[in-house]
Figure 1: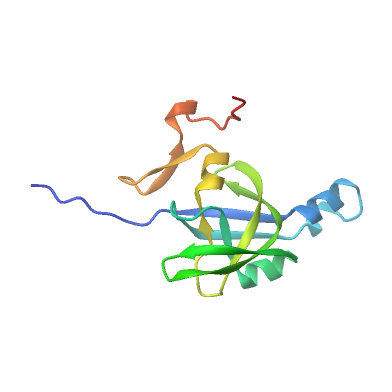
Figure 2 (figure 1 turned 90 degrees about the horizontal axis):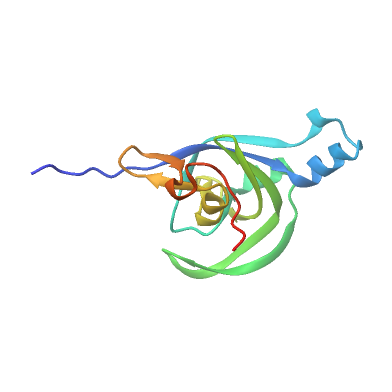
Amino acid sequence: METATMGRVQVELTVESVEDLWAARKGEIPPEKVRKVVIPDALVDTGASTIALPTSVIEQLGLKKVKERPVRAATGPGTVSVYDVVQFTIQGRDGKLEVIEVPDGNPALVGQLPLEMLCFVVDMKNHRLVGDPFTGGEQVLDLF
């Protein structure tokens, strides 16, 4: 009998300040001044809803807190801080979402909303993200 092994799926996640991107588009700042952080080992967490970033990454991007939200976590209920929208990129596909804060020392998390937005599914056998077979592996928008 063969034993299956489980493992972590990690991806390179690039996050950029949308506020800076808009300022660059309007010519208010040069494109090279857009604050951007590349996280080489973001953890894909299908139990999470959205993108979670450590405090230091939020500070590097200059994000502002917009609200607090209740959270259900493995440690029990609590409250998290929600920050400005970022543009995020994984494997050449990009989207925009608000992010939640996790303390430094915790990994950046990529949850279900960004995975669905970018049309990725988890290939646990090979520990990677792949394009959703339902969309032919491509990033598409649903309009139904």
